[in-house]
Image 1 (tube, rainbow, N blue to C red):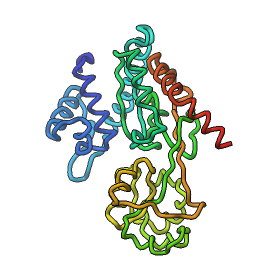
Image 2: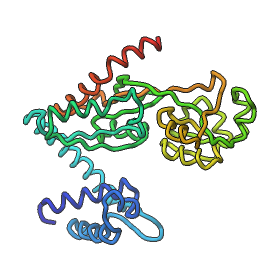
Image 3: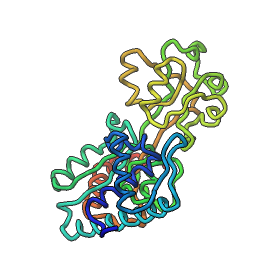
Image 4: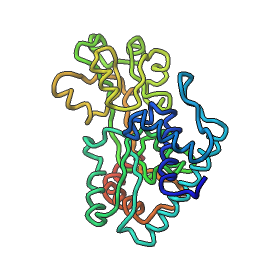
Length: 310
């Protein structure tokens, strides 16, 4: 093989995405490429390296032993490139750089969420910095932070993970919703766990057993949705009840398409959101500046909220 050049770097980046997407089919959406084009580029990489990296076909995608070694070495390579880039960014000052920012979905309608204001303040001061935003659930963001795939995260984890730093920003109240025709509304009083457990429920997913009804849901739910939009679709089907943030559900509430289920106090539910970073990760100057703007935008409200919680 010749010395590594720009073409090889790009092909290795493509290889990483394929492996981490678990195959060509899933990778085509992230790469915005046809599967045939991905396959050709993989063939090019294997030719340049002089080895077979993966098996693909009816039996599915699987790395060869050589492919696994190349994958691990590629991750190390790009990790070092990221470190180099961030060091260069620091030398050039905060005026340039790239921030990987992950956040949970459907926060923009929360009046206590001031992320957009923080971004506006940051961009006004540092217009050349590129912010790459991704929407994911808290588990994926935390995993990405620990693996240095994200610099900054907005998460709502109930159980904080070792190695991450959490700074409280704001909260949201979530309520149990259903369609107006749902039978649970016939009981004419606040619903209890016993009333609800015989109805189909939407759970957050295996990584999110956090709602007041998680134990009940584990036994009787038939649908899982780690994000709010999927939960809304299931509720609007008329076949499920589920928790939604009040600010997010308001659009359907106003249209008469959803109603809030009156529940006993034990089923009340609020979610706290945190600015989350890796304790061991040396943030670039650009990332530190955005972190500061996020904290400044929220700290007055968050201090008041923390006092009310104590």
